[in-house]
Length: 476
View 1 (tube, rainbow, N blue to C red):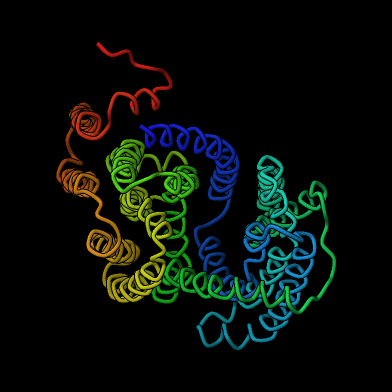
View 2: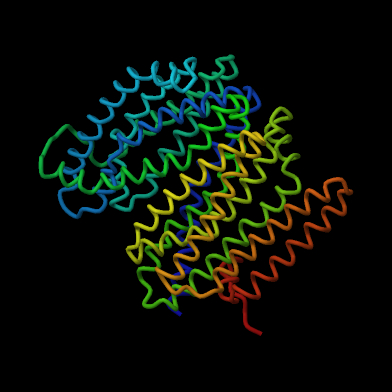
């Protein structure tokens, strides 16, 4: 079938992207582990809160000129010059604005001692315009040149951060880790790019960039609020140390989303080549089942042994992050399994649904995180994020089924069956934490065996299974 060929091509392309993303993720994670062992949780909490404030304003400096350049077919260099000029101007304006307003703003937020850190992070606003030459590499499909600067930059930035932490620079080692990583990437991009932008101002081109980019800018601001409002409440209500635990739990679990991103990057181009909804249904059933298989294994392991893993990797002082880490890992799995709905919305042109759902999540996260974090600390905050997302998943399933595309029920059964498995497993973990390790292992193996049988027999045909294993399985 055509859909099977497209799935195979998508999996192969996704693995190529995943290899590139995986290397930079490994470097970044190793750096985070080293810094977590050398620094205190409060340092990470300070970084999280200062970044929250500074990066909010950073959204207004990115008019998404790179996407405009990739989309356009003619005069790429001229359009790059104008997009670069526009974003450089916006970056300078907002750097000056943030440096000026930071003392008053941080006083209002109750964190005046973090003012200098917010001001320092505003330097990163220059990354948006200076990184624009990468769009030419992506436009020409030179993905190696587009990706490897970030990998090398992660390595250099990690060395800078760890070295400063070794010499007891505290929070500044984290700040310079971030800034040096961005700066190194820009240097490499300018060295390898086929064309370096210059200042230019063409009214018609600027209008084209603005017309294309303003809606994306608005959406990115809203997504930023949704993705970071929990950091604000935790930092404001519980303090920097607890925010440090919360930040580590969230960041560590969401490293796993890189797998999702690698696969998802090729899903939209794949479904645009399909002829009918039947093929799309088949593709989404299989991709959802594959993603469930990939994610549910580490998630169940983390539900049983999250505390031990946190202690071994990051050190004993980070154990308070365990429960939040486990909750976020379950959420990561659910987000990964439902991520293929976004290409459906783009394919059908129903992008306003994404906007409405983002608004819904902003409201729900704000309500649940505020009240639950006050009552139950960082574990309550993580639970609030989980509740907001799980209700959003259920609502999105109803909306897509009724108003977007007649996806068959199998894809929904895969998702909600795995939700049920994870919830039952989590409840079981609470009840079984005191039994011996051998019984724990038997329970884990039994659960994973049932899941594997369910996913393969009910959702994956032999052809797709053979792609996962990397070889053809001969029919009996």
